[in-house]
Length: 98
Image 1 (cartoon, rainbow, N blue to C red):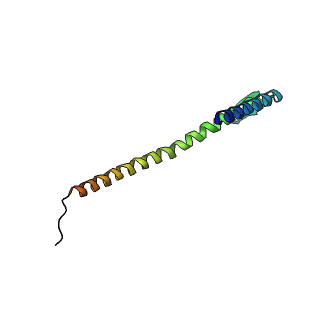
Image 2: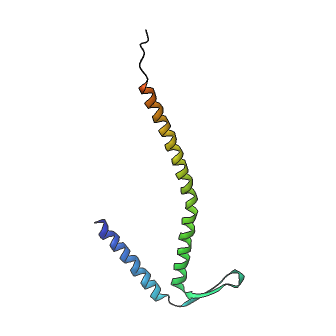
Image 3: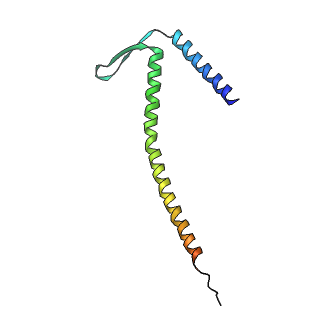
C-alpha cells in the first residue's frame, strides 16, 4: 500500500514539474556579482537553486553528524568499561560478613 501511495505522490510531483516547465519556458536573466550573467528557463533556474540549497544543507549537517558519531563512540567506550567492571566484580568471591 505504501508503494502505491509513494508512486502516486511521485507521479503527481513529476506531473506538476513537467506542467510548470511547459508553462514557464521563457528565459530569465540572472545578474550577479563580479559580472556573472546567466540566462536560462525559469524552471531550470529554480531547479538549480533547489539543488544548490540541498547540497549546502547536506554539507552543513555533516559537522553535526560527525560530532554525534564521536559522542556515540565515546559513550560506547564508557559503556564497555562499565560492563567490564561489572563482570570483574561478579567474578570476585563472595565473603561471609560474620
